[in-house]
Image (cartoon, rainbow over all chains, first blue to last red; front, side, top):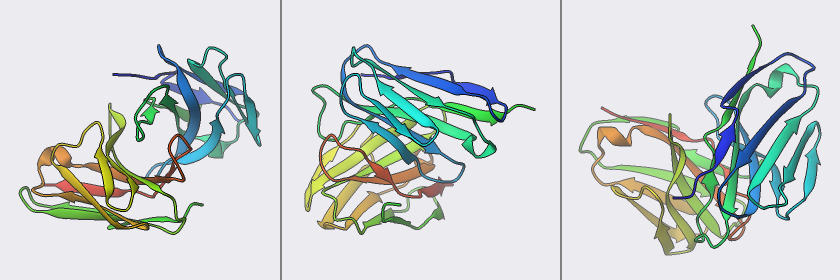
Length: 113
Length: 112
């Protein structure tokens, strides 16, 4: 089946650092979504992208829909402690069924010891 | 925050017993979904609904059934719970096909 490859799997951040993560697929997607999940809670939508090449910001977060329609990235600028959590990419594949939202396995952000 | 509630939030049950999880939304969204989240597998779609009494299977539907008799409620039933169904279950909603999905707080189910 279709898969999303999300990288890195985990990373450590120090307050003030910029963070970048990405998601790739071998097939075309119509939509890219980025979510954040804190322990014990449901995923929270951060950014939704609907057009190839689209660049969208939400505060310190910026995400882009890749031109090839097969990838997306999320950047977090000037990270703060509350950015810690798991970030998921998700997308609706071209030609997918009505319920077909595919998720990446997540990028876990932790604070540097 | 999207108006989505799930009940119960936590449940422990024994193998072989029936279990029903409820999702309630106040957004009047057409689409509702049930996912399960497991370590190493991420979020996987169980069933979804595209209207009252209109449902379809997802990736991991075996052992689960759903019902939607009202726009605002989507029920997930495990007819005879098994230990492999121990998981965290999330409900999600979206206004239409292909749009962003909003998630509920989740139900942690343990089958002993």
